[in-house]
Length: 179
Image: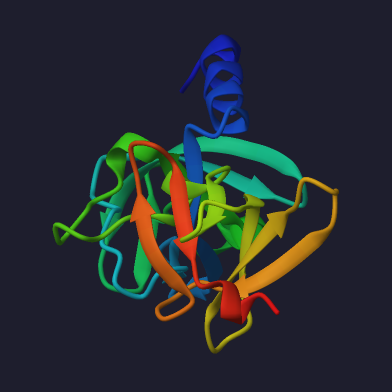
């Protein structure tokens, strides 16, 4: 199917942050190799037929697979046509190349685009840089590393975040919410 060098190349690209997680595979659906699938971002529609994706599970890249069929929440990969052949994919993460992500509106962006951005106050005081994001089921939280090597978590939405400068990778936050 793919050469070892090609799969190593895909893994290396994913390691260098050119690939990002897009969703998670669930239990098999039916008997013909279909799986349940859930996007991490409910608004996403980035996966399409004939797209190649990396499959990641338990800290290992399992393989590079080609999507043969996808609907809203059901996916099937080329070469997997039986229920027993897809069991090991359950709870695997799907990663895609950043260039394949769809931006639907002018102001939309992906959090990976602002990872490592410098966080400042409106008075130009450097708070630190964003090193991670997580979600607590209610909102997105940005983890910031300060110049003093301290960790600060802020809610990543207005009114906490005032402005994002994408090209400069600078984010302006409201100082009152950092106290």
